[in-house]
Length: 207
Ligand SMILES: [Zn+2]
Ligand SMILES: [Zn+2]
Image 1: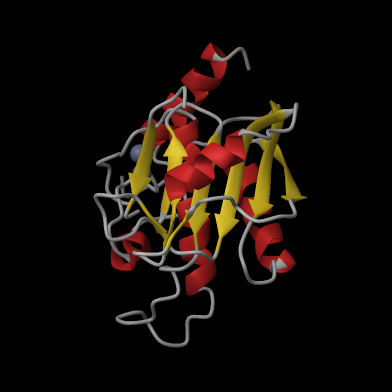
Image 2 (image 1 turned 180 degrees about the horizontal axis):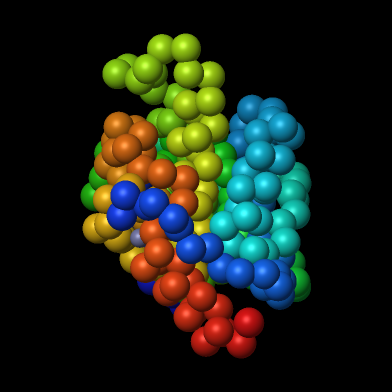
C-alpha cells in the first residue's frame, strides 16, 4: 500500500471551522460491505454529515461478492488491513475517497479490535459497526447513540485520509478512541486546527 495506514481501537469544539464551499472536486464513496442488510436511512444520514464536514459530494456504492481472505478463523474477526487493500483494488475514477462500512468485527494483529483503519493521506478507509452498539454505561433512552458513534468514526477515518493524525484538542473528532466511551466524549466535528489542516491538504492536492 502506498500510504501508511492508521488504526483506531478506534477543543471543546465551540465553533468548528469546516471547509467553505464551493465543494471539493471528486466524490466520497460510501460502501456498505457488511454481512447484514444495508440500512439505507443510516447511510443517508452519514452522507449528509460527511458532505457538511468535508464539502465533498458523496455517493453510496454497493458491491457484490465476498471480501477475499479477510476472515481470520483463529480470531473470528476480519483483518481491516486486508479489507483496505481489497477496497483499493477497485476505486471509481471520480473517487476522492472511498469509505467502506461493515458490521464485521475488525482487527489488526497487535490489537484486540479496531473501530476502523484508514490510509493516512490516501484514498481508502474502513469502519466497523461491530463495537459501536455496546450499551454498557451508555445513557438509556438514547436511540441516536449508535448513529452518533458511527458518524464520528466515519468522520475520523475520513479525516485520516485527508492527512489528519490524532488530535489532542478536547472533543475533536480526530481524538484517539480506544473504547466507545472515548467515542461518546468526542463531538462529531473537526476542531478548528484540524479543519484548517484539511483545507491546507485539499489545496496541496490541487483542490
Ligand atoms: Zn485514528
Ligand atoms: Zn482536532
